[in-house]
Length: 402
Image 1 (cartoon, rainbow, N blue to C red):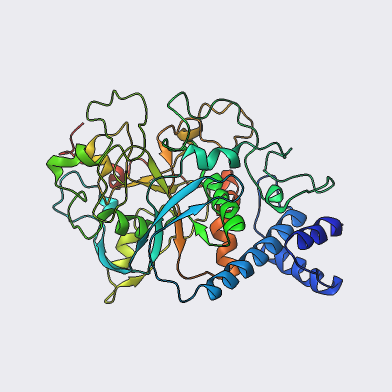
Image 2 (cartoon, helix red, strand yellow):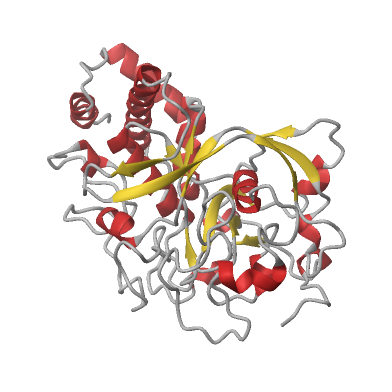
């Protein structure tokens, strides 16, 4: 049975006059045919409401973009309307670069090659990772939710921002005593949680935020450089929070080291960062035969694990923090989670993992926007095909420093 009251209420909150029953029925039919599955099975009413919400968010984003079309492409400081917390974005001009590591780069892994030319469109990227001050108000709300993050549609939905899916109540203190507030990076969120934060922020600001693709992340990290790091290797500890001895007990304040040439802090170390891509160990091999640069590549995820994180962390030696290093998620990042089934929001064992915002200059289609914000919870865990650890492509290079 269709939940018309929830649908119409979402329309009203978005300033929409609503659709006719026939139009809404067609929308619902299309959503069902698309057949994305959420944990626990297909939930038609949730998916329908999500799609209608995204359609209206996208309309608002396009309207704002058209109004500001003549604005200069430059960095800016944004403010989260819900909380008043500021965040800084750096304008990254588009360009072409060699993605991956050179075959002679010390400590490289096989999945970092072959190198291939990639063309990246302009975008904005967070000057820092998303902080606890930004993320915590989204993570901890006074709104009662189901484990999947959605409100019961039988209740009074209140504000639209409350209807947006967000984490269930955490079952432990998720900073693990390492520090919270404006200067410390938020950690331990799943790919789904990071993506939904981007939707929550986009809804409030009228700008399109998402996770970076692998290509965007590496392009921004390199900042025009071609070596293992965006700085001289012997100066890496001036630019990166790393741990050659692997005895450090936590992250430090963001911006404690020097930025790269484009003004981005902590691209090497402190906390590694989610990207939008699913992990494909041989994606670069498939691209290597291209005669022209590949435009804005994105490996669309088809399962919850593995997804790609970049940048290394406070617990890693330098070689794990190289510009081309690809880290992929694993079920071991959630071993301590006491819940059954495991949470779709928290990775209790990933105390070195956060994320950084990207804002696209080009606005994607409604279908792509839906996938970018929802792919982290679209797939059943029991369908995941995890990496074969005996494959040589995953082995730590012999010359790597322990």
